[in-house]
Image 1 (tube, rainbow, N blue to C red):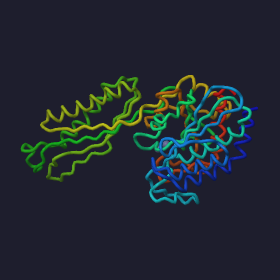
Image 2 (cartoon, protein in one colour):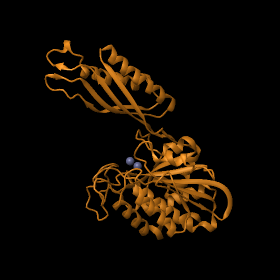
Image 3 (spheres, rainbow, N blue to C red):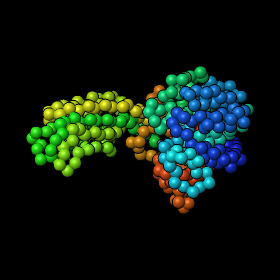
Image 4 (cartoon, rainbow, N blue to C red):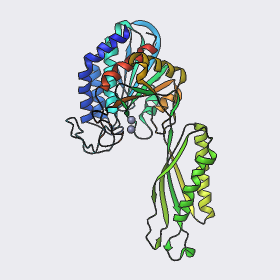
Length: 394
Ligand SMILES: [Zn+2]
Ligand SMILES: [Zn+2]
């Protein structure tokens, strides 16, 4: 039986996959600078005899075609980059690179996918179809390595019919996954706003144009984009996390600078909201005697899990893990560049539990104390292999 065979193989390679993960964790590299990581992935693929080619700079595309005839193709994806965070941990495999850390679990994704590749390679004689392995660069920063992978043709020759991805999730206990059909994660755009007035003495506002008051109005008014203009069924978030009015108690500054994030789950609405936000901020500042420069940096699109594929992945996961270990996820307004795949080909992205309350492993993603319960690797390697082979009709 395929399931039993995969379980056995994932057990056999478990300690080796932990070794891979610890190596990657010790030597993290920032987005689009994954040179050593990429070399490590390539050497591991060489060691297990899987053909690969470089793609998208530091990315790697590996392919395994089963012996039985089939033209079906499924892709499985991992991202490889780390974050500019100083790790605060005493584990022996803590980051050896100052201010760089695998705090988003991409070391887990990469080592897990190498394990999955090894399992599938062991079954090469007995399955039908082709599995492509995407080891992609730069998930954490715009424009996102996924867009480069697609640009460089990873979805073609042979044409991929489905892409499967996973993300480490400490909120979920190791041994379980979370999955959601349909819209799952948000699009993300960065806002850079400069409100320009005319500074002066705080005691003489009538002689100045106060950009602080204008900026305050603009922040409040822009929330109407969310509360009054977004369709109630379209999740939308607008947050300003940076507002700098660098005057003093009695000094009105010349300008106020703000940065924020806009998130949505509908590309048509997203475009419309961009126009409205800009117009509202500029005209409001103008009406109050000031000026506004409103710049939007476009980030990732929203992530949608194709319904039929996701139902199938859910079924395979329940079969492999037990139904009680497959949790339903809510929408999540974070962004992920896996969304690029989901915009052009049937895709499914699930959250893989890596937390363990008893062991005290619960730090959130992107924190200096993030870690995983490595037992999750025994499940994640086999699960992804099982899902991929089942999708190919095995
Ligand atoms: Zn991240
Ligand atoms: Zn991530």
